[in-house]
Image (cartoon, rainbow, N blue to C red):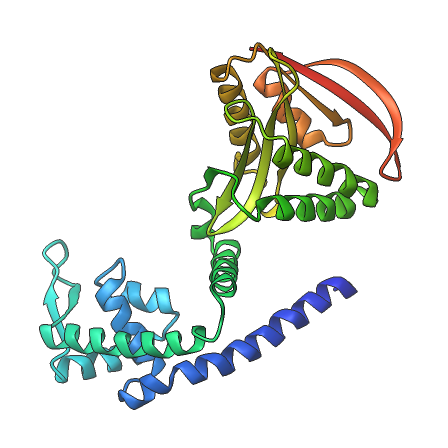
Length: 307
């Protein structure tokens, strides 16, 4: 295990300790209600889970079958749970909450919502958004089911420009070793876009998933017949999902609809993933030139697409 990975393992372990303490605070309601956390999770699965069968519930929650059976037996004796033979397989029992069980579940979750609200209330709206987005990001990255979550392509809004400059500068420094000169370049492009914006001729789109920005692209006017595609980027966590292609397709379609006859772009040969997207979209390489920029020796490329 290398030092970086070991440090990351330690970070996760530290977060686990922190979250366990936080969850313990939230579980006060569960203790007061006479239900353990495990029992509350089973009730939730019975109310909202995808399967009404004990084996599937136990698998979803990682519970020992005998332990789960004892809890379900107590729920049945308390009048919370109904177990009926499954019409498709009489050997299985289909589980469902009774009216009493549904009332208990609703009350339990309402009290838990109060506790969670108490935890979130000291935070500002922006902090709450970042917190829930981070939680969604963790779920997405750690759960295979989270990989298919929908990506939204939306117009830019207040605050996006600063984020785009920050993320592109950081990513290109990490991945290609580019210096602060690149941050100056993209800051100038974003500033010019905002200060000299041409409605109906210029656009910026942001790709977003679970409230987090995962990519962006610009379409700017060069002259009456030519537009430029600029500053395409996709977060590493979102690569391979077709986000870059969707952003480029949005640029191409909008350029046509806006009356442009040609779409051009400038990039560098080291940006291989972006170049593959441009090629598949029909762009043609028309010129290359060596240059020294951003602290590196690079090969700049001009690409064009006839619309």
